Length: 473
Ligand code: C2O
Ligand code: CU
Ligand code: CU
Image (cartoon, rainbow, N blue to C red; front, side):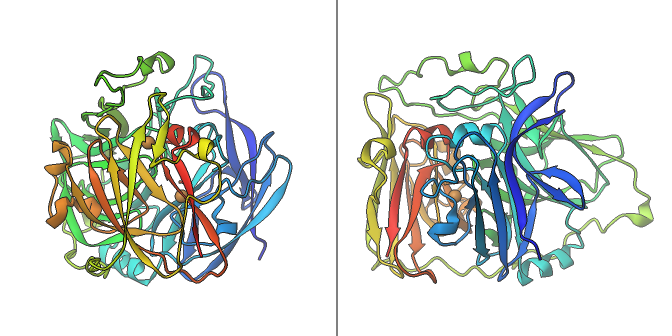
């Protein structure tokens, strides 16, 4: 079988009324039809090959976000694919079923390349997932749907705007699966949504709102796949790079009724100025955009007719044991690595004393393969929420301490954990003042030194150097 060939290129798409928009995207052919940023599907245990043909005027990569793979195929900026060159990624899929994603990751240019469109989804399936899907009686693409959410700053000429050296790039238009003003027609039934926040910097607080009321969602999965059981939630914080898997009940709704998938308002906690005041008005560069933490409509859901005899059952199967992820490990004997997120007087972000641009690209530290560590990530009080992402390894969240009230109020398990913390993750939000402890097992089937990145997935922070390299040897 021919490997899938993705061409990174500029492409013109009719997104908005009026002038077309230039995107940078991964273009390919599916059944002789031109598509961009295809959703890839793989089975755990498969090996898939993807070719990248870089026809941009600058270096790019494809990073496979969340996958447990070797350095050479991880697609970080350590292995740029220069303009006009090609390479092939060989991915042995060794992750749990779940929604993962792929995106460009060149040093210093990740923000602009994602804002322009270089990102897509990767769905991994395994036996546990297929069994659940059968029990739910939902088919992928019918009532089990991916929602890839991003905001873009769009100018009057419909061009996507980005400023080099930008901070926290939020936008005035929402795209869901690359569609502006998105809506979804649903029948009165349960639906399963896989939400992925692929925005540069915008944190979402996602909820399905009918009138004034939030519909209860059943949270069944996070970054690294299914949770042990379903958790009822009304809204979920979804930071850049995070994914959630939720079931939502529209079965009591009548045709013609509307529900809005909305990001609810929240306290953005942008406390990075030492004085406690906000930095210069970030909105100057984002005319028409909702500020961080302001409510934002994402997608409308419209209920349509469905003959009663064709309706799926209005109740769900028992979801008290949907996967076997096991309890948290006993980490008493594991060494603790302390990591501190902070900003210096010149407004540069650091992880400990490390800033990727200032400190160089050599590994900040090295870890013995097969060892296990607790990472204790502490965010300064004068800071922002940082979605911290680890390449190469999924982790478990052990505890949260000194959390802001909005987070503390969501606790459902010991250690300050909320439902979203109870599965496997590759990206974790550390709020200002918070201390989050992770359990990481550095076992992997590779040899030699493998280098990976740890960074903030606010892409402007990443590009400003809030990133480090570590080696696994
Ligand atoms: Cu999704 Cu290092 O990135
Ligand atoms: Cu990643
Ligand atoms: Cu950050």
